[in-house]
Picture 1 (cartoon, rainbow, N blue to C red):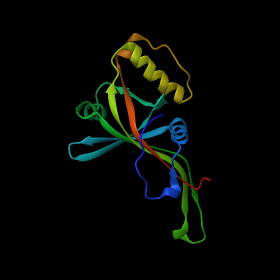
Picture 2: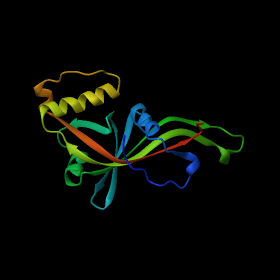
Picture 3: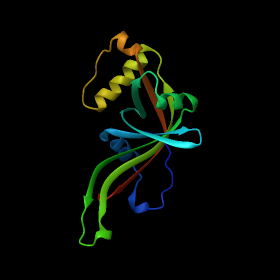
Picture 4: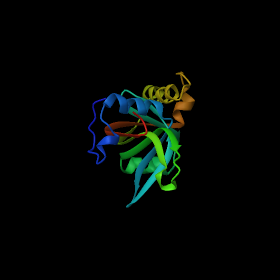
Length: 160
């Protein structure tokens, strides 16, 4: 994965190895997608697929998230894995163990049956359901989006 990273204030929590960032993207199951709704942020949790530096999303035709992506294809996202609280005798000293990625990219609607099939297979493989040959009827009624990841930053706490 050849993407740029933003500078982080807390270098002790930064994941600088792109392979580790990619491993988190491959491990997480839920992605929070950030879009623009006029001058307001709009965030929606989604299942996703990750393959070869791209994120794949899907859904039924219509809906706010796809309308917003059509109007402005620039998106942001975050994923988190390994979340657990770390108790401490002092309440304000509790901590949280996690590994996360925050990133940015450009969304593109996949149009051809071949593209949609590839995107759906990236998603189902990511979720552990293997790959499939989807019917033309299903492909005609599903929206599949590919996000070209342009920037991603990894962060962790409570991990060596």
